[in-house]
Length: 150
Image (cartoon, rainbow, N blue to C red; front, side, top):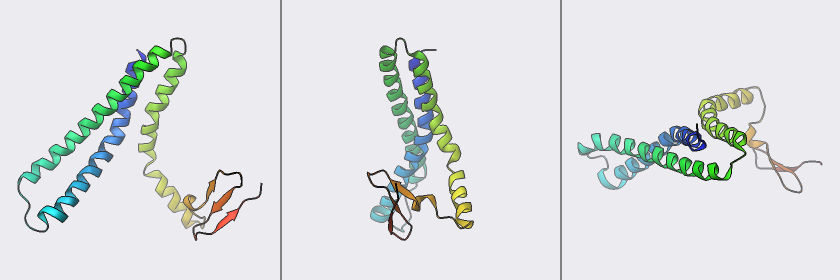
């Protein structure tokens, strides 16, 4: 299998993650604008019943096409540059493919993990952020900042 084909598979994995997110975002925004500024609470035209799903499928297809073409183009460039380092490129492709899969698989597990930690009395991870500066600080949930000893 050529490197460009591997990159194409990675791009399609990204399309499976980004496509639904982008489609829901665009359709949600469009429906909100139509409701607030065009139709309101009046009955909507019957064309909306078929136009919204068609637009959603078009956004999904455009996202898949964009991710696939980007990955294929990147794969062609990397294939030309990596004449001897094919093993490294295949590891890169594997990571590019696995990252959206792992992200999609753990999307529901992370909030559940944070809820369990909160129920056990621990502070949520988002309130224990350490800033990588010459001096390290921690921002607490109440907004206070604590300097960490080095």
